[in-house]
Length: 473
Image (cartoon, rainbow, N blue to C red; front, side, top):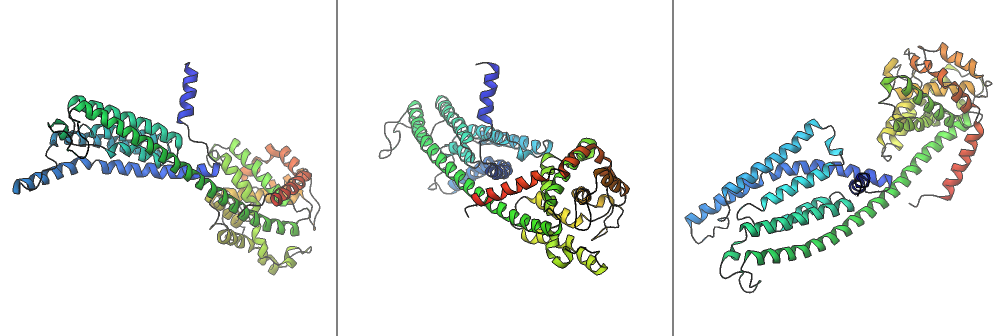
């Protein structure tokens, strides 16, 4: 086996199991929780040695006072239990140290393998404590593997646990650390199993029995994990369909407003497209935006930008479609739509849509996309960087599309005239840093502004797909 093929083999063995993305997200979240629980569990295991020593002390005291009470812990040794306790404490300190020096330890994929190693060492050490007869303890490691719902990891863990069990039984037989009845002339009492009177016989018998138990246990584990995976995948698919339906309804309501207010009805798609190219350019030009404008963030912001005017659902049609100049009273009604949009998203989307980051962006954009950089905007008069970045980006994208598009009350401006207007509002209505990068994306902006056919085709295709593949609820 070459070096590259060996790397490829281990990469296939130790990588995460393939799942539906939504299911994988659920399993990943549960894995982090399991990692945190196991860290606490190792801390509790540190008490096992002292507890056994305490039981031995109590048993000796009771036996000394009344010889009719059997001293069931008489064969245990304080020395071996003490060494085991120290070893367990060291293992826990290793894990605890990693939690201090490793950021987000519970999210590391290799943590589950580290836990297997730690518990393997712990069980292996416990089997060498004089007078301790470990039986079900060998199944602790496979039981831990079940918590991760990963068949590949479960099989690896069972192999490790099985050979740990075999080696410990063989070494116990060679060192004489076997149950007391093996050393007695009578062997195991009649009625259970007879004729086992030597350590080698006990070793052979134990390995055979535990091998059968491991095989049965592996079958049960595989059935449980496969069943759990199917249930999670079915539930995640159903939840995904419900979420898509919910967000589709919200976007549909926003599109209804868009069709009423604009002449084309594709304002939302263009605003989303402008927001995306602005985000991408900001990330390139400004170091400070690289962390907060990841690929995921850019996608979510552009999608959330489609909901920026959702609050206009609450505005009467007579005002929304009016072609004359609005009165001050009518404009005051219009100015309430950011808060209405925020409340609609909070009340009807936040409770049921699990992507919290998307909800956060949607709420911030809906509420703050009419705030001005100099504080003269509405509804709260936020100023400068107090306005969320996603709202500042959407504000530029929204006005840019309004300038470049035809409206009932105006014709479309050419891109140079639109850019001049935008630049005159730099530091007033708009974030100066965003206005500075507009020239860099001028060609992209012009392409989006004149590519209306693309949005018509995409919109029709999306409608056809949705009607042909309705979610099965």
